[in-house]
Length: 463
Ligand SMILES: *Cc1c(COP(=O)(O)O)cnc(C)c1O
Image (cartoon, rainbow, N blue to C red; front, side, top):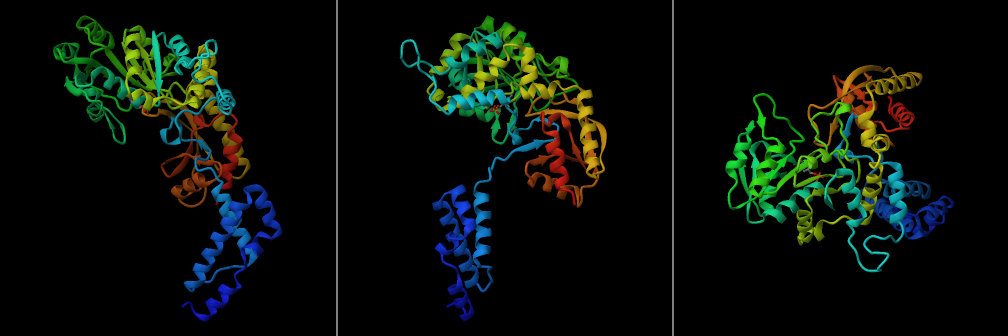
C-alpha cells in the first residue's frame, strides 16, 4: 500500500483527456497524430504514478505533463542516423557512413524509388528482364570489363566469387594477403564459409611468382590476390605482380581473382594516392575477375561490384547465393547515377564527393582553414591553423595521406574529451580529432557549404 500522501497525489493526477485538451497539445496532435500523442501522455502519466508510489515526488501538473510529452515526441521523431559534419579528416569513415553521395545522384534515385520504376522488366517485350542490366553496360564502359554484376557489398562479392569458382576446391593465396577487414571478416574464415580450401603460400613479407606456380595442382580453382587495403608490409618485401599471376593462370588454366576493396575507377596518382591500383588498370592487366566496394573510392552506395570475364560473371549469377545478395532498387538507382558521372572523369572528380575531397588541393584546404579560424575568432573563440595530413580511411591506402591545414582549438571549455562529446551530441553532430589535448578540425572532409554550419555548431558548444 502506498503511503497516504501518495494516495492523495495519485488522486490528483490529471486525466489523459485533461492533458489532451490543453491548448498546446492541439499543435502536437497536428504534428504527430492523436494516437501517438495519447499514447505518450499515458506513458508519461504511468511514469508519474510509478514515481509517486515509490515515494519520489513527480511534477504532475498539466503544464509539466505537456512539456514532458513534447520532449518524448521530439525524441521519438529525432533521426537516429543524424546528420554529421565530419571534421576528422578521414575521407571514407566507415562509422560515419563511408562515401557521402552526390546530391544530384540522391535526388535522381529518390525520384525513381518513390514511384514504380523499370527495375527488371523489358519495356519492348513486356517480359521480365535482369535488374543487372540497369548498371552493367555502364560498369563495363567505365571499367573496360567484358561483363559485370553487383551484390550488396564487397564482402558478399568475395564470398560469392569464392563459393562459385572454388567450392570444395583449392584457393591459392599469399600469406601476406590474409587480411582482417574488421569484426569477423577474416580471410581464412571467409574461405572456409565459402567452402574453399585455402592454400597459403609464401611468407608474410615475400611471395614470388614461383610460389604460386608451385602451388597450382589439379584441385586448384583460383589464384586469389587481395589488396592489403588497411595495412602495408614494408622493408624486405616482394610480391608477385598481377601480370605474373595472369601469366601463370592463363598457362595453367586457372582464373586469377583480385579482391580490390577500395576500387577507384580513376587514376588517383595525380592527387598523391599511389597505392591504389585503378579497376581499369587491373582489367587491362588481365585479371579474370575483380571485385570492389561501391562505397569506398568509387564514392557510391554500399555495394559489391564484380567485373571481368563473361563466363565467370555468368557463373556467379547462377549461384543460388546470388538471390540472397542482390541489390535493391534504391542501390541500383544510386549506382546507375553515380556511374553516369564517371562517363566524364573530369566531371566525376568534381561531382563525386569522395573524389572531390581527395582532389582538394593543400591550398584549398588552407584557405578553408583560415576562413573557419577567422569566423571562430569573430565569435570570440581562439583558434589557429596548422599543417597536417588527411587520411583516406575506409581501410584504404595506409601511408597515402594528403596534405591539409587544420584548425586547432586549445580550449572550448572543460576537458578536450568533454568538449568533443558536446560537439558529437549537438545538432548537427560534429566529429573532430583530439591531438595534444586540443580539438583539431580538418576542413578537407567538411563538405561544400558546411563551413558556416560547422562554425555555428562549434560556437554553440563553447563553455
Ligand atoms: C573493404 C574491403 C572489403 C569489404 O568490403 P565491404 O564493401 O565493406 O563489404 C573486402 N576486401 C577488401 C580488400 C576490402 O578493402
